[in-house]
Length: 150
Image (tube, rainbow, N blue to C red; front, top):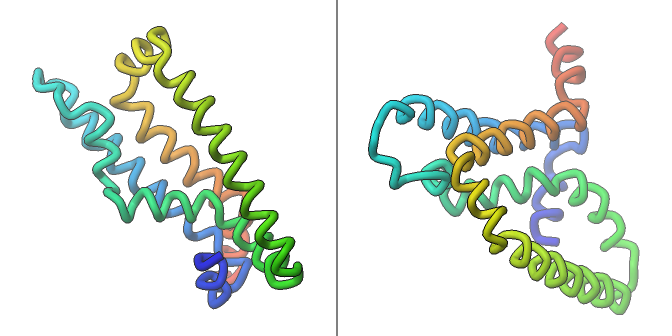
């Protein structure tokens, strides 16, 4: 809700530019992986790619990924009653807990962890690049920018 209020100063048609954050973090992670590929020191792994953004980067990616939701739910939270707001938040938190339990079950499965250990070095940055491109393309911000520049 706080992020939604903060994004009200940005016109909805330009919120898609927030997709540049995960795109930049992913590209930086891929460049670092490509530079390190020949090195024998492999202790860094995907954690190095994630450290590219640090805490603020992860928070930015979370906001970027949810920017469309933020622009959608801002008017919803402004128009529903306080009781409905609390109910919405409780349901959201319960469902997040369900997803966390499911994610832990999948993420700790030996076959999954073995596979991820082999591909994590390029997978995490590639997912960030894909997420950034998806946000930018789906938001329609590129055609608007081209229209402004023309």
